[in-house]
Length: 374
Image (tube, rainbow, N blue to C red; front, top):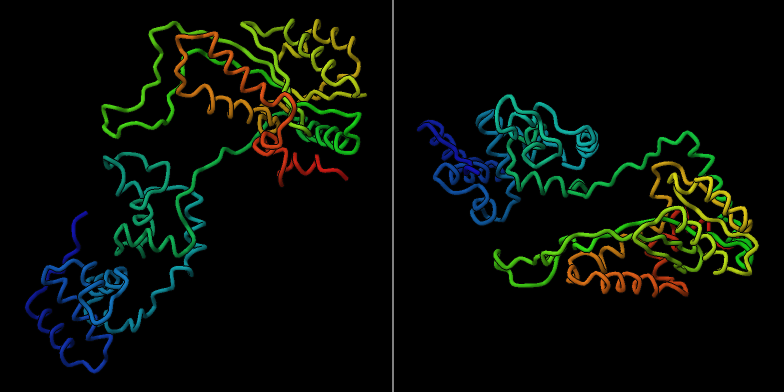
């Protein structure tokens, strides 16, 4: 960024010098001294930090500079000790309301690569400074510090949860009822979250330790092998963290039916096994429905459509991808990769509080609250 300067006519310099040397008000002498130093080529930041009797916030010197350029010497003197300048926190509500709306044409003038370009999709310091007239005299560092004093900063966004299912509320209420039933009678009522996933032999790139030279970046080595796809069915016990799974090249009707029967054998004392699952068409296939009649203790609980946030086993799949599948070195050893995946799931065969915590089934989340004993 170009350094802020202050070109002065001889008469302007003479007036500033006169006030600096003879005005009885200390704040006037200080401001005039600061502006004369800037006019002599010193950086406003350096003047604020090291060029005055006591260090100043650089924004203060930039504000004096803006006052003088906009209103002249009279304006510089009239704004005593900040004058009408509002405390940054007084503008917080204004900032928050405008930031919610996204950048507009004001930001485009400074940030778009061409005059006809669209405004940016997200806020930047340049876009914020261009949008608010009262920030025009600030450096980008000054804008950043002011936003920080107002409790504003850069944060990662989260996707808005939305399901188009018209029966969302009713399905959510049923999920709550079965979780409360498991919490009330854990010996006889079991709730498992069920889902399918697939993974390939090729690793996805991930972060890893190694030399910092650009040419030595970690490589997700695929070893020249053909890719492949393997599939899993998993069932996560909502109270204990136990995981049951089946895998295979094909996960279809036969594998789903086999998984139901495996769950029935896994919980022989349960009077009711609620299986919370999504609306994949295979789950409702006539053959699967007919097979369910042979294990009447199992009752499907249908999630709202497009609502993965209600199925905590999705977190287990994320953990699996991060711990085993990302940046792995087994692209050339398909059997060993599958063995490692099954080993990861097998560690939860007898339950895990760590998994429950990771999946949001322990703590203060909505599902965790519904699972608390009465």
